[in-house]
Length: 169
Image (cartoon, rainbow, N blue to C red; front, side, top):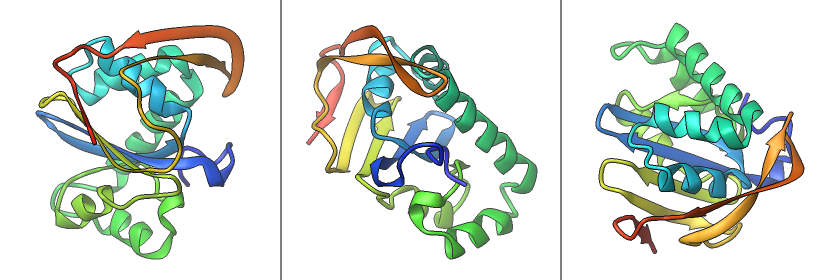
C-alpha cells in the first residue's frame, strides 16, 4: 500500500529521489512537494538526509516512507526483485509501495507518474525535475504548514532554494 493511503488518493504524486548511492521512489501526498524542496534547501545530499528533513515537517509521512523501504528491503534483493515486480504489475501506480531502484524494471517504474504526476529530486546534480506536476508549480522560495499526526497545524515553515539548485522546467 502506498504511503499516502491515509490521505485522499486523488492528491498523490510520485517522488523519485536519486543520490550517489542510488534511487528510491514513493507515492506521497502533494503537500510533501514543498517539504521535500525545503529539505533540499537545507542541504540534503542523500535520500536518507532528505527523509530526515521530511520528518521535521511531517513525521508520519517520513515514517511511512521509511517503513515501506524496510519492507521492500526484507522482500527484495539486487538480484531478486520478484516481490516488487509482482506489485508493480498488479497494483495501480498510486498504490505502489516505496521501493529502491535496483534494475531496469524498478527504474522504469520510478519514472511513471502517479496521480498528480512525477517529481524527480536529483540530489547529486542539485536538480528538481517536474516531469509532470498538475498540483502546483514548485517555487524557489515558499512556505508550508507543518503536520502533526498527518494533519496540518498552525505553524509554518519557510524555505529558499539556493541558486545552485536547478528547477526543471
